[in-house]
Length: 411
Image (cartoon, rainbow, N blue to C red; front, top):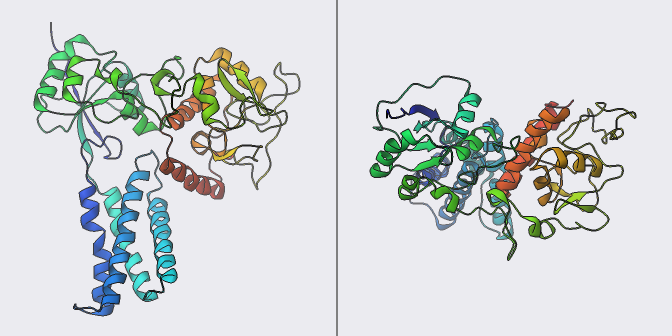
C-alpha cells in the first residue's frame, strides 16, 4: 500500500505558533526607551528619576508588544491599527502612572520613545518568517486547501518542517507512517481545524452540522497522542467554563451552560430553543439572517425591521437591546432563530453567549442573505464562541471602529 505524500504549507506565524517567540519581544521592547534616553539624556550614568522613567517606558512597550502579538493571533489585516492602538493604550497608562505617582517625566522623551517603538513593533509583527508545515490531505485539511486557493508543492520528507497539519478524525490510513515519523522526530501535530480557524476566522463544519472535536482552540498535540490518531478528542476546550455544566460538541457550551453565560435568558428577553436560550426581540434588529430589505411583508416569516441608522447603516453596529453586551453575536429575532435552528443543527449554539452590539461576524461579513450566507455568518459566530477572550473582544472593537469609519461591509 503506497503512502500518502505530504504537502508543503507556509502560513503566517500567528496562524500556527509551533513554538513560542515571545523571547524576541522581551529583547526588542526595551530598545526604543533606551535609544530615546541616549538621544535626549546623553550617555549614562543617569539619575535615579531618569532610570525610573526609562524602565517604566520599557515596561509599557513590553506590554504593548505582548498585547499586540496576542491580538494578532486572530485573523485580520489591520497591522497598523493594532500597533498604534496598543502603543497608545499603554503609553496613556504610563502617563497616568507617572501623573498619579508625581514622578519625573519628559514629554519629548515619551514622544520620541513611542515614535521609535512604532516601526519596531510593526516590523516585529509583520516581519516574522512564515511557518513551514507538512499538510496531510483529508477532512478539514481539504477544506483548508480550498480556502488557500492554490496548489501546494509536495514534500519529499519532513526535514526542515516545524510541524504537521492533519485532520486526525478523517485521516487516510496510508498517512500513518508519515505521522509516526513526525511523532518520532518530536514534531508538533496541529489539527487542521485549528489552522483553518486561524487562517479564516471561521469554524469549519457549520454547514454539515458537525464540528471537529479536535484542535481548534487547542495547542499542538503531543506526538504520542498524534501517533495514536485520536488523541485530539481527549483535549478539553472551554471558552468560559461553568462549574458543573455539561459541555456540548467541540467543547462549546452545553444546554446547562446557556443560562450561566447569558444573563436574562428565560425572562422577557429569551425563550427556550432546543435546550438553549434564544433572544426574543419583537422589534429588534436584523441578525444573522436576511439583510435589510431582503424580505417583504408577504414573506412567511414576516418583514425584517430596519436597524438604527448610523450614517450609512453599518452591519457592524446595531442599536443595543436590554441586557445586550458590547461584543457578541448579533441578537436575532425569535421567529428567525427558531426557523434557522430547525434547518441548521448548530445554529442554536450561537445563543450560548451574551448577544452584543458588535461581533466577529458583523465586522467580517456584514448582513447575510439566505441560508448559504447565514451558514458563513454562523461559522464566524461559532469561532467567537470557541475563542471567547478579552483580546478577541478588543480586536473586534478595534475593527468595528475601522468598519464604521470606512463603510466596509455597510450594505
